[in-house]
Length: 363
Image 1 (cartoon, one colour):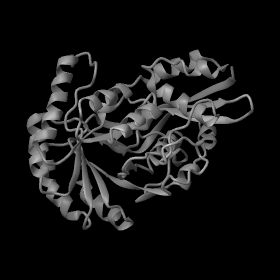
Image 2 (cartoon, helix red, strand yellow):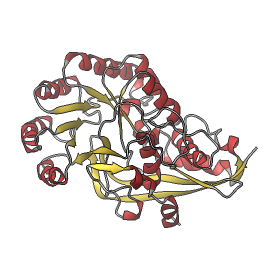
Image 3 (tube, helix red, strand yellow):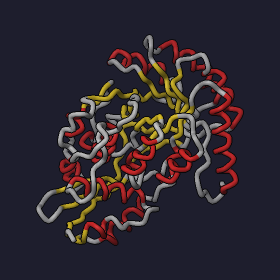
Image 4 (cartoon, helix red, strand yellow):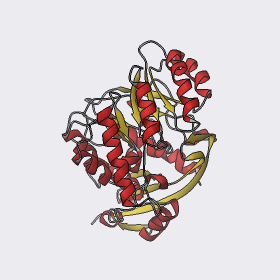
């Protein structure tokens, strides 16, 4: 058995500006960066960036699991973290992949090549959606992003009064450059009636899809499985009743969620946050086999997690849609940011990310 050295560092990093969503204002990111060193001195990196309201483990649970692993152990021991701790499993798998202890993600060609070795069949760059702020601030944010070259825009809705936000929709659409697409992200804030009002308005407008109009947290103490089933049935019904496509985000926060919605024949888009999956390779393989429509998205992780997530996006063999990674600059300390928000992200920019610099900045 191959012995590895395992280390981790916990972080709490304030955002430059609070991120406003239907879940409230998010002011700082918490997570763990892990470092694995193989017997030959090779080093791999990963990041556990949980989001508890997505159903992941908490940061305290992640830290406890990492402490229990210990500093030295076999690769098999590192991989034995319980499935419920999927962000920790994700971080360890990413690190072990870099030191050659687990198989790599598939490339766009459909086979496996070592991470970071210049998979020639992968695209040299991918387009990126611009993230727009909630409320009236959206109107001032569109022109500079359009001038920079963005042609896909993501607007956070479900934050304010539904009538006020609906009144802004036509102004937002009018501010978009010709041929641009708009994504609406409600973060599960709407009930049936609100969702129907929005979807009725979206039908003849340049809306690519509406992301997570409704959501019931899985296993919530006050929600129960009955409400979860009711909400999932509502999403399926809305998807069949309106022409504007719907996208799942919070509803597919885990590998088992993805499998369940694939089994249900979900007709819309899967917004995949690779950093929140416990088994990225297998889950993406299942999505690819069914020819699912996939959008890769950031979980607001640091550059370490972003590197692993973007590698998964570049290796996706299906149709490529604009990435949901237009989030940087994000942190008050820019040393933790991924590639600067631009209309495209290049493969070489991803490989230029230096995880050791992030690790050292946390010391």
